[in-house]
Image (cartoon, rainbow, N blue to C red):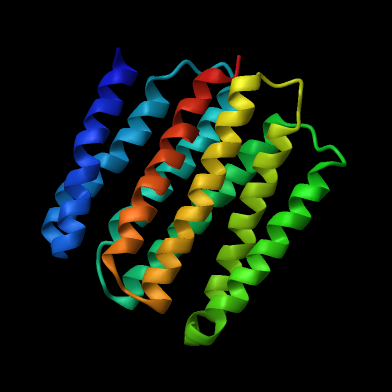
Length: 217
């Protein structure tokens, strides 16, 4: 019942957030994005926690992402940089959480190679537009790529519950691809279409990760 209510509230808040993104209303975004991000934290808290260490690492990551969500509402470069750091630390928590519950197999290196190659391609695409943000973006891309690799280690660990494996990997991928739209909006072309695609991907990924804590039986 609680999960259904959370999903229903998110389904109302997300279109409202997109409306205020279209209007470029900072106050509107604060009023919708903040509670929407609080919902994925609440989702994690309300699940059963059969793997407490994983739950606590994920919860810290979700809270850090909430901080990043709020900071990215503001247009100032300093707010963007601090938000980037908050997301980076959130990804670090996810990396530790995923590796904590999984056994690393040799096949993980294939996922690592594919994810790294794609991230290098993305960096080459962004580099001419980064200016002084080159190093922060490199650090961020290393960490988010590591998150995908860590989620891949979960996916390939057949000793873990099947549903949890796929939910975690899907959540990590959705989060990764949502960040491409954040980067495009910040460094290439500021346009509503970036939010129109990026925000649903982001929140879908975060809610999948939040709900994953209850599938670790």
